[in-house]
Length: 417
Ligand code: NIG
Ligand code: FE
Image (cartoon, rainbow, N blue to C red; front, side, top):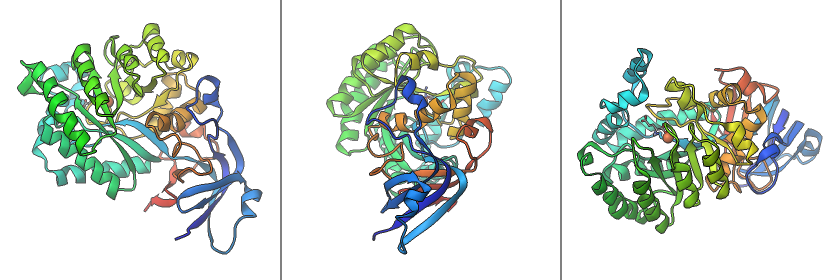
């Protein structure tokens, strides 16, 4: 069916039109905004963007018209780092942190990732699907249209496969787009505590081949940190994933400056994520291989730390910075990209424009989807959001407000549904 739709009356149509690559340096501040803008869509793709008068000329009787009513229209957020499939939650740890315990202390005393692993192993695929389907609604409401989704709360072959199947089913049945990442190297499970290398063997010899055979993940991620996987362990895992053709992402330098960034560079990984402790040498490593930094300020906020990554140094180094939520039940129980924009500007001194480029087009490129999503350009998928504000800077500025009033995926209104 030829479904033609025109969106008119955008106070600002924030297109992010630009080169066919991620934005760096001053380019991150160029959002290619069309004032009083409009766009024409056909069958879920963008045909043309332009000034209202220009697009209105193309409207005929077959065309459905949506008036944005003088509001901002921009690409859906692309959240390039989430852990959205898990059972239960860790509100108890939230309370413990309020009472003074740190995230790492809680993890070291049996809480943290391992406590979610126990509950997630006990849950069925249907139960996990139902829980994650609820979070899907939260993402949509916040104006997110694509998320990268990691496994990592199973940590046995069958349980990791179970999580990745849930992600596949969500992608098929829920309105959000999901990009699956295998994160068997999220933590060493208790049963391997005294035999870590056997767990790495299991990931390399059994999990990765199986995940690849079933086509369940586009990326492989490793939590490279002294409290999780050491550099040599991480290297073995990345080698195996690369051999199976997976793209690579690395959780690096979250709690200490380590060799995670260097490792990401050594493998030409797509991204190095977190980077709270990344300094000059880590930034230099990322630059040497054009690895995209994925910054997760909500996880800094939620664990009560004050150590934010040095976004300014990364932008100055012309790295193609990405912002994401890190949605997970422990360090970052928020699906809110608007909150991330607020933190990016208040805590990391990114301009509102830089933050938007990092949360859309740069995020799309970090998932290998820069040609399809992340900007409003002819030929791309019509994933966009109408926000109830007349200037894009209000998104992070009016903090804690749900701005989105219409979320469209492939030209279809998905929220409110
Ligand atoms: O990205 N760093 C490791 N993993 C998550 C935390 C997951 C959890 O606490 O359950 C993160 O912060
Ligand atoms: Fe994470």
